Structures are given as structure tokens and as C-alpha cells.
Image 1 (tube, helix red, strand yellow):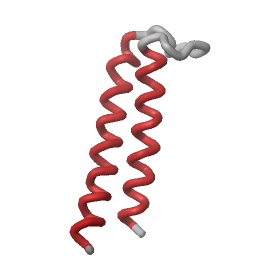
Image 2 (tube, rainbow, N blue to C red):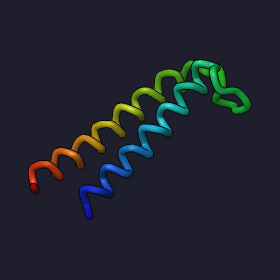
Image 3 (cartoon, rainbow, N blue to C red):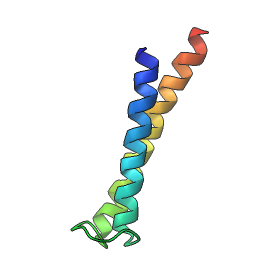
Length: 65
């Protein structure tokens, strides 16, 4: 159960990071983050953190089997 939670949370954080990045690059508009280069840097970092969290969940799931 804990591994599935890590994978789910990691996937959600990755999606949020991608949205932040797309807003930072100006691809998604309508927000104060749109076109702001800070979010173009923060977004990929958040997405990478999400991938790491999901990867930990997958790795634990595989080692438990």
C-alpha cells in the first residue's frame, strides 16, 4: 500500500512540475506564472523530484515481489 502511495504521489508531483514548466515557458497562459523564467526552472526540478519519488515506489514494489 505504501509503495502504491509513493508511485501515485510521485506521478502527481511530476504532472504538477510539468504544468509549472509549461507555464514558465509560456506554452500555457492565463496565470501569473506564464512566461516567468523562474517557473521554467522550478517546474523541471519539481517534475524530477516527482520522478524520483515514483521511482523509489516502483523499486520498493519490485524488490518486495
